[in-house]
Image 1 (cartoon, rainbow, N blue to C red):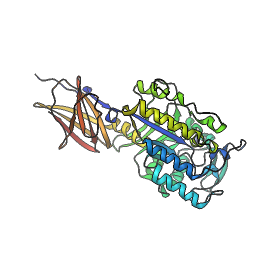
Image 2: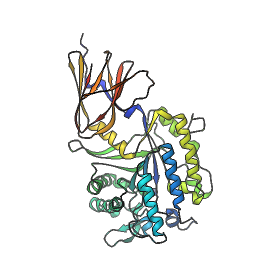
Image 3: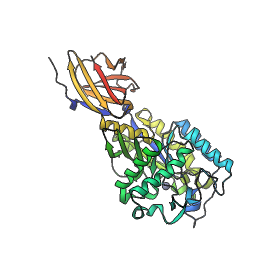
Image 4: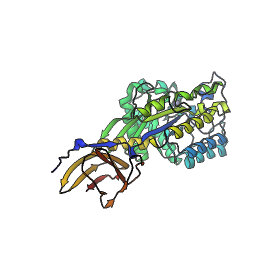
Length: 406
Ligand SMILES: [Zn+2]
């Protein structure tokens, strides 16, 4: 008896059936603490030594953390980071950039956070203007904003930092978000040659499920701009003032409560953020030490249920899920699943609802490895049976992929 299969029996899942988790760090600049310049009326340590930046790199390597790390192209408007900054030894500036290039960038997307995070920068005269980037909305337009972002991306790109997106200082340009997302998308494409851009502008610490959103999409060209959302407040901001981190708001020691646990139980993406100032804690490193505790709890209690991702990787997944077309056809005893997409995506994971006994899943000419046991974690190029469905994970190419289930 033939069982009819339709595309409604197909569901795209998160890669390897793990919930994506990402960590966002705002405000870093070479060897300088932004707070010293931006919150100039408060006492803040000016210099961030490279030993601290190296300790940060050690931590993310140890825990396999992924997400994004801003690098301000013109920190506080004191100068471009591809030229010698005032108050920073050239050798120290070079060493900071080396650590970011060689140790941070493999783990984290590098992005601009506008240019200065302080006074808006006149990109023609190369000097600070008389309003701040946070108040930029009414002073800019799409062309200016695209040039503004391209200016910053070019600085990072030419330093070998491979930027992929942007962060908005103090939720700037929220009032003109449609223009803002188009400007980022166009600037990332022009300077970095990347068809998919992402940005961080929104925090949502209330919703039970917090997902990235596609702000623009060209299905034919495979181009997109995606907003990634943090689901928490910065738990370590007050460490600048000698207070402890509120890290229990993320995940408690027993792993039973906290915002990340709530998101996990709801099947949400888990995005959270902090600031470089919060990790540095005026030289005490309180926030960085507290982050180690949080990462340990995440590893212990959420473990194999989550997958650390860069923001660009998450943007690619949701864009690929949005453009991929699927067609299911019966061919004798076999089922043929034809996937077409303009966006490639590694570990693309699909569930098909079916009661048929399946013995083999082939992706193109490759036979996927069958996993037994429902708790075995899905890896690249594998598949397994679950009650009422089968689920597989195989790289999605740009173009066509034919899977045969027999
Ligand atoms: Zn910021």
